[in-house]
Length: 321
Image 1 (cartoon, one colour):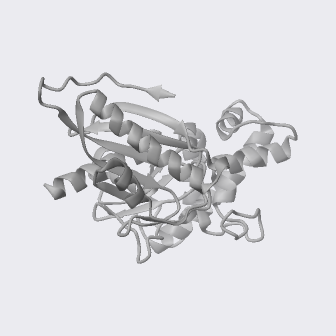
Image 2: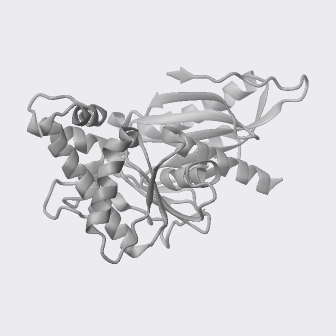
Image 3: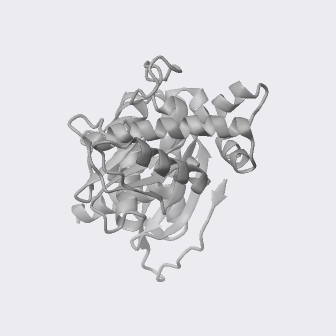
C-alpha cells in the first residue's frame, strides 16, 4: 500500500536532493524519500515476507530500496544516500545484521548489498536506536539528553539515548530489553529463553494470551486494548499481566541505567491511557531504588524508525561532502 505526500516541485533543471529511507520491521517494511528539510515526499509500505525465509526478505529489502531510488529519479529528485535500519543485533560499523530472531538474519552484510544495488552510500543501524535518534531530534524527547525509547510492536527492544546519542554498547547489543526474563519458566521465546518480556508485552504476545483465554479468538492486541476499555474482564486480566510484566522489565532497566524519561512507541502505544495509567501506577508502587521517570507517548508513532533512517542517511551525505 502506498501513501504518497504532495511532492515538492524541483526547480526546473535543478533536481532536489533526497535520501532513501527504509525501516525493516517484523511484518512490514516502511520506506520513503525524504528531503533535506526532513519532509517525506513519498512513503510506501510493503510486507516483509518473512515466511519466505531470510534470503527472500533480503532481496525484498534491496529491491524496495532500488524501487525507491527509481521513484526519486522519475520525480526529478536526486537521491544522494540511503538509510536502512533493521531489528535484532546490529553491527553498524561493519554494516552487518548480526542476528534477528524475527527475520532469521545471521551475519548478513546488508549495508554493502544495498549499496551495491543502489550505487549510493548507505547508512545502516538498529531500527530502535534510529527511532530513538528521531524522537530525540524531532519528537517527544526533543530537548531531553537522557531517555529510554521503547517501541512495543512485533518485538520489543529499547534504545538508551545518552547525551543525545543512542548507546549501542560494546557489541551493538545494548537495549535488548525484550529479552530480559521477567517470568522465569514462562512462555518460550524465539531467542531460546523462557519468560522474556517480549513473550508477554509484544503485540503478538497480547493476542496470543487472549486467544489462550478465549479459544477461537482472533483479536489483535489493539482489539484487546479496546475491549479493556469496554469492560471485558478477560481482556482486562490479559492486559494487566502484560502491563505488570512491562513494569517489571522497566524497573530492571531503570536500576541499571537511570533515565529521566521513557518514550513509549510502537503499535501498543496507541492504547494511550489504557497503557500509560496502569504502567505509571505499577512503577510508582514497585519502585525502590529507582527514580520513576516520566512516561510519554512517542510523537512520531510507527514512523520513528523511518525518520531515523533518513536522519542517518542525511548525516552520512553531509559527512561525505
